[in-house]
Length: 513
Image (cartoon, rainbow, N blue to C red; front, side, top):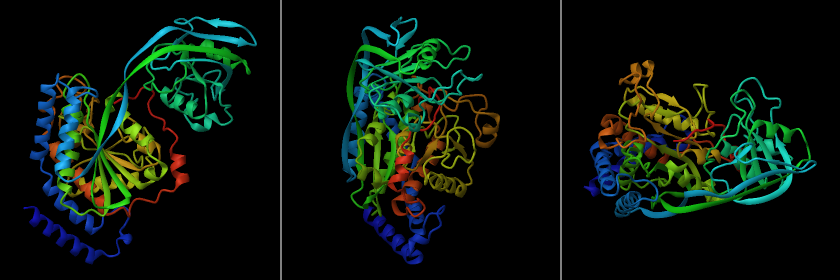
């Protein structure tokens, strides 16, 4: 069987190559006949029944290991073993990378926030300010530098963009304490920019409109800053911002317990190593359940695509990634991208992401690479629009409806687009409610969630629409084949452009998958 398939592949590739040389003239939004030929063959090999077999195995793993496949659990470790074993037997070069995640955080002593000069003043913990959950420990006395605050605050909430852009820290003196107003982007984004600018500590303060004046507890979702992070009420922040040159003493005493899990990476043995296509899905579930739609569905589609792609002598290196600890804040993909050297980063030409591709009340959603709907998150890096068009072509050929969905920062494309790597992918909907217009487009039930079992124990093998799963698994295969052979539609990415794109993007303040 394998010999016959290889003969058909070689024949198709030879014929398409003769017809289409040189490939460089292929239109940006179109695949070449070579990649089209392989896409047809690969989608025929990626069968929904085989994808569903993987889902059943992930369900069996969860059932035998406490009911879930969460990072750090036996169920996750068995999921790693299952995926790795399948890929090794298929001939892939399989490796793992370590992923750290917090298993616990504790505040060991009351925090300190006090003015040292020009006036001595002590603020009360639990009244005037709180330690931000996941804050590191530290004892810092330094000058405060206010970051791009809107004072007095505007009449409407979320008008301050303080700290959202790296440019907000132009002129920031390393070693100072960054004073940052609440506003339009996540606290973590603000703190990341502060750390990159050399801040010794961060003092957030509320924005100042009615209902946005007091401090409150929240988890910043990043435990590796290694410096104090506190949140003060608006009156404190406003007072500090009004006194340039104020020196503060900030002290936090905390402990973070760290666990370790793994990403699984499988790379084709053929293909240009300087042109890498990464195809990924997160492997972990939440603790509440087996996570069969979220995200065994994406994992199974990617896994079956990899198992069938082994028959094809790809032109570009394809790296299949199965991310750990996504449900804890995109930790696996984020730590992977952060660990890349500049040369390794630049070899990655694009990233394809598949997270929840079989929702029961599904829609066929494509990540909006060009922001053509002009709402929500901005467009992806150059090349993302072309990836979106590739998926659109797939649905158009099948006469299926589709719609755009924003790069909201809620899945593993996030760290890639933040560093300038173009991305795209598919999504069939989560806890959001299907509108009447969407029900008219896709069918299903208006006024009900796309996935009624999102992040709950009922996200089981019964929580998957097999039609959506089958169609989207074919789409995974088609897009993978396209870019395994033809990258002519993806614009070159130079270092300055990548650096400019590395600034964090504005996403909803408390966005989480």
